[in-house]
Length: 454
Image (cartoon, helix red, strand yellow):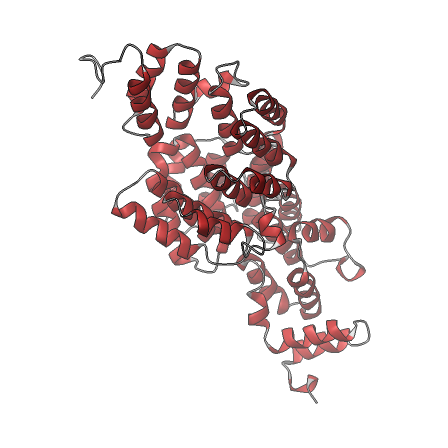
């Protein structure tokens, strides 16, 4: 009696499953058919939107895909598997299937798989301009500039809306002037693509552009409240801003970031831990980032590199070296593990071992924050800095702090102090190191010379 009472499209989908699925799978399918909107909340919004559209055209396929995605604990692997080795029922898919697999992959950072699917959707004639642009941007994010340019050129046709073509061209060519014009669009044609543009804009000058990036993400989160990726990035940037603001606004920003990062994902836990670290709430970090009995983190959260970074830093500050060693052993990322083992070795006074860990990690580093951390750690020893030319090419506070630290460690006190004086108003770290250098210099260094910049 249950199935005939459903919407006819759902009844067909559930009936066709009845002889193929186990009882548990059939029960999930019936629950989906009864309340699809609730099930859509378990997948990224862009995927849910594509599934909702597919449901009106091919309800059986939509039901099966949602069942596979919502039950998966490894969405990236699921997207790759459905792309490379589709099951029989997905061998001749509607173009919307390519679109939703592209959205699933891009949401979780697999730009290669995303690009393949976006291009397939576009070449099938489905919303060609939109998905060819997304394929080009995915190739650019993957680092394949040649393919990105080739796909962008395919957008050069009379049917392509000008805002999509010009936006894509500006993003791929790193045209700052055009990017600035587009990131202020109130109604973007794609919120995730706009966030990619904001990240490109932010990377050009992290110190100067952080405030504007925050405002854009705040606007995006208000307009697209179901996009958790946007919420997480906004929370991340709020923590970054709060780190550099020790006033009332900074603390309020930290509290709001913690609120935004509610959830059981590793990303949310990492953001909440960083927020707690701003005002030295070590016990809260241990509760969030360690497994039972001391903490409440899941295995996945406790082994996440971003979570363990903050936890280990807190443990080292508290002098809990053995606990830090145990936490590091949880990490599955070999690069992060090398970096954290270097920090542990340094805390134990074994500088040679620490330097070796950092140097071993260096050629494998992909993450920008990892690169900055290793540069800073090695700078303190005064030896050769790997990739120094790249560091010197940057014009931000973090790079200049590291260079000043390296100069001081090598005994070039004058150069180090001169560099710190230029950046002390933009960087709390530079201000602190400058004050420490003044205090420890022998003979004492005057706090400010008449020729110094104000």
